[in-house]
Image (cartoon, rainbow, N blue to C red; front, top):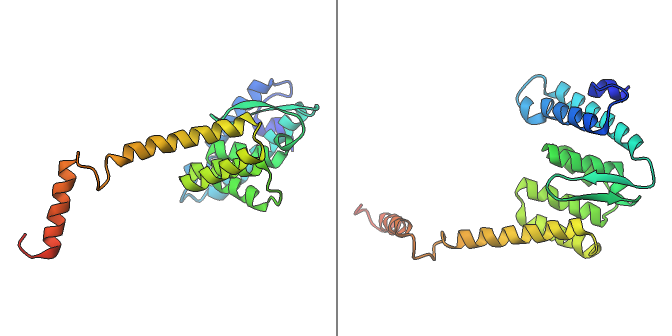
Length: 199
């Protein structure tokens, strides 16, 4: 397999051109576009081929002692060896960014090492799935295992702050709120309807 051909870029393509082509192909073959479609298997196979080609090209470009990484809205930086250089974790990050949560989860579930990076990525996966409590617990564990990692602490801080904002918004809409007269009237109506046949 020629990774340049798979991504449709010339062999002298810049890193930006490779990333742009990769993002376009991920959008083109994204599993959400092929739900209940007979081409779903072919699209998944093609997406896997695109991911492998991208991994191959990026690994060759970053084969020095340290490589760069970027992860959606959660920060970026550089890693030297360690877990950031692990191809599986890089693939998990890309899958999460692309919305391919099943592929990301499969890699994480098959990984035996439960490092800080594993807990971080697992927490981000849980967050994307809407499992807020699980995400908080895993991000806290990642932060506890690697307290000096800014990416982990920022993500943990953000999710805690988002949770507080969510709870504050939800508090005013609960059963204990006296501000929402319509909800109280509806509750009274439902209770009256359940208790007697007068309504």
